[in-house]
Length: 262
Ligand SMILES: Cc1cc2nc3c(=O)[nH]c(=O)nc-3n(C[C@H](O)[C@H](O)[C@H](O)COP(=O)(O)OP(=O)(O)OC[C@H]3O[C@@H](n4cnc5c(N)ncnc54)[C@H](O)[C@@H]3O)c2cc1C
Image: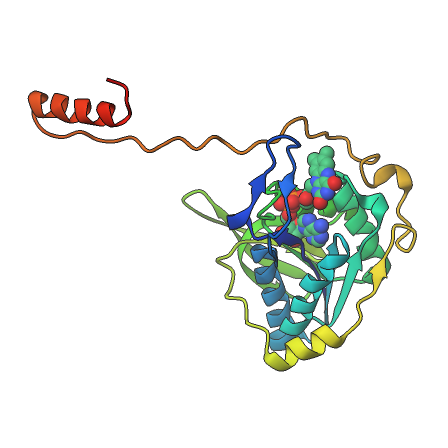
């Protein structure tokens, strides 16, 4: 069985700040990590390979050259092949152009795939678009928000999370699944795996390598435009005042005096 896993390198969002002037993310000094949901996708692919079907787990990531670090982590976890899709011409891609570019990479390096696994969303962009858009591009069935996956010959049965419960969906494979954190517990890479993974070279594919049409990639191929981006203003927490009316008035005056409002 050939399983493709899509992995995005993202900034560790607990530290992310937005530059109020340019509206762009301040990336300096912010560590990058593998998108957490994608680790669950990779874990599931490895589990299906090791426990049921054998075969190959192929990881593809699109991003700048430093996204190689994400591939190293995936390789150290046990992925068989890892590819980076990287080209200046991909810059400015919205989710549609990203999904198209990743689709071209899948057609190039793993056209005979049985499953594609993605995270339910990237923790920076947060749209959850890329998986479904890629399934549309490849004209294959998709199941989103998967919390359990059983694969049989020619078909897969997935439980997808919905509000207050779950829905069981059966699809023929090849198919694409986006996964939640309830699916499994990702393994830690072994020390040996980390050493081997960092010593390896990973193929870097350009737009020409995957035969991507110039009109469909990067800013040029993106029908959406970000008009404004800003961090919401953080307001101080409210204070509850207890007691009878006189006590409450007393406390209120104290609070307002501290704020220099009376
Ligand atoms: C107009 C516009 C311009 C943009 N310009 C830029 C830019 O210049 N530079 C930039 O970095 N971003 C840019 N972005 C953001 C970029 O489009 C998104 O980061 C990207 O399309 C993925 O969307 P997302 O983060 O919402 O992922 P989601 O759709 O939430 O991700 C779902 C899953 O898809 C897979 N996935 C998503 N992205 C990738 C990837 N790159 N590689 C492998 N797997 C992936 C992962 O499995 C992930 O869990 C731009 C967006 C817009 C709308």
